[in-house]
Length: 98
Image (cartoon, rainbow, N blue to C red; front, side, top):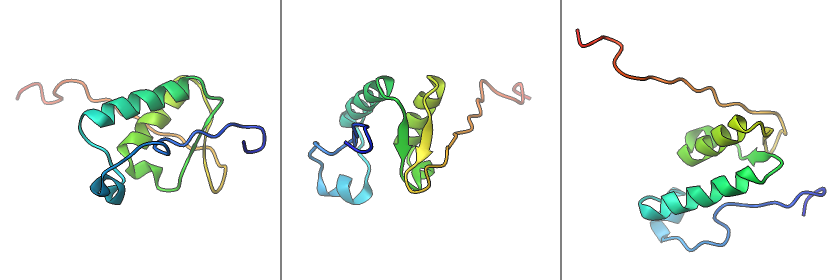
């Protein structure tokens, strides 16, 4: 517990292959199960803290987006500065098939 908060670190209690640990990336069916579990944690959290470089992690970006969508504060670990993910949505074709 840090300053009155319980800290949940995704992946702390999981076993990963050497490749997954070296690349810090899980793929396949396990990834979906881990992300589902992480989203459940976010839905019951008071906020989300991300590590420097979170923008280069697809999983971290998804977690930040979920947190933002439900109104949770998201801050960067070392600065405690708020972070925000800008989302652009592209639906369909923009050239109308021309």
